Length: 416
Image 1 (cartoon, rainbow, N blue to C red):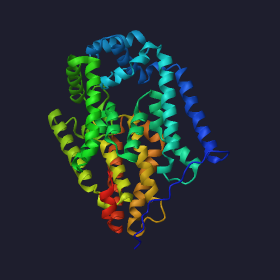
Image 2 (cartoon, rainbow, N blue to C red):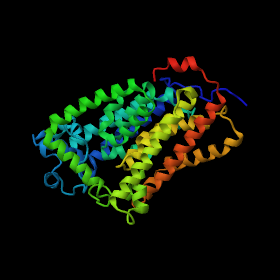
Image 3 (cartoon, one colour):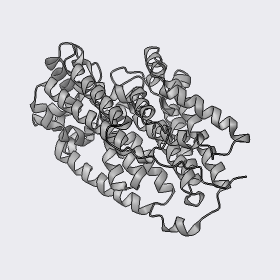
């Protein structure tokens, strides 16, 4: 049985008159063209960015302490838009503060600038992550898979910061810097579970950096809304958690999380308290399982697969998740594909693993899968698929680790 590391050789994008340059240029045209088209479209005011704009506008007008006043949000929303989005702004206060300069601009101009920033960020990720994502080998196929991943397009169109969260997880993958991960607390429901995994792993340096960034963002939130606003935000979040059927908060059946799945299956049969306890127990069990299994002794190859599993579990444990929130999953999908498709990866009894991973890749990379489930209000069915991806990634990491000899010296020298 081979003990070679199945980590593929890492390719680099070489710019010039070649396939990589043409692919990157075509991708840029598609992304920036899509933003310009959306900004001039008739339905732009119904995008999720309209909610962000409302939140930023409230802070910009000096009414931060009332940011989470539902009546204020609805009144301002209805005064700004003829056909407003029915959802409410539930993001952390520091996000509204940091985006408040955009609220000084007309809505379409603010949407355009934010969209161009996200398109540029996505293009930067595609280019800069290539050395760390060796699959597929063909550059055009690599670019195509980015464009085919529907959650990225949804995030770009809706003006959601999910692309920024993908970038933050990518930095965490490359450097495992807690300072950077803390910047993702605008989606705390996904970042905190990931930090808990590192707490279980006793990665104190990582957690120290994470805590410092969290403290900074907490101070920014306090500056934005004050103590009264923070208390209102906590009450607002509790109200969301206790009303998973409320469409203004986002219906639970439209969320591919453990909470969404349990609510869809048992929500009409058990109380809210029992529902929350069940979700909490399942989430904690998953986080502890990943944290205990992710040991540095198993080597960098399986370490990447464990990172992929950790990101997927963090998404599963998030209580509030929509289609665009799948965006960080693209990094785990690329990582898993690289290992299970490589020729050095052991075959034989792991053929089942390969087949399962292939099925997951097909499901997550087919755009209609998301749109059909959203239209049917059945996005919670993505939860079992995410769970299956987690288990296949963990099994793959474990099998690779069993083949590879432990290299204790290199492990102890690894700052992660």
